[in-house]
Length: 168
Image (tube, rainbow, N blue to C red):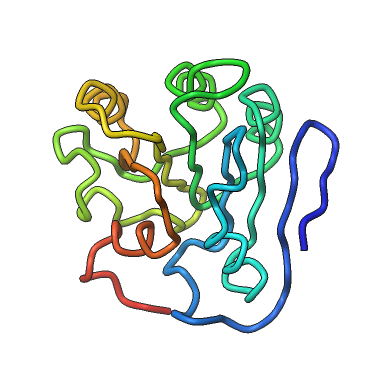
């Protein structure tokens, strides 16, 4: 179920038991900031199965407003948004989104994601249509949890947390 709200946000929230692979370890609330929401069918299916609660923002402006009043376990930010660069948005999210213990020297390795979804900590990921080394370097230098390239599934987020993370 997807309902569209003001501020160009939409939510896909369906209560229920965990689905195909169980709940995302520590990741229960996901915000996707992307003008092309159709790239995230796997996430919508997970929400429909009750594995996660999913929130969409189709532009950076609505994401900034959402970040002021909402905490999510993971933020997926498209590198290019209709109203700004995803990299510019990262800088604007910093005052409102407390990131997990990300060490830029670890560049999104599983160790740097140990506390995503715990307490008030979030994992912020840049998502791109195509791989560009310059974008990956820029993303990791900014301290995000990771740089991801489409196609993207919820399992990519789960596995980015490393095999040493216990399942719930």
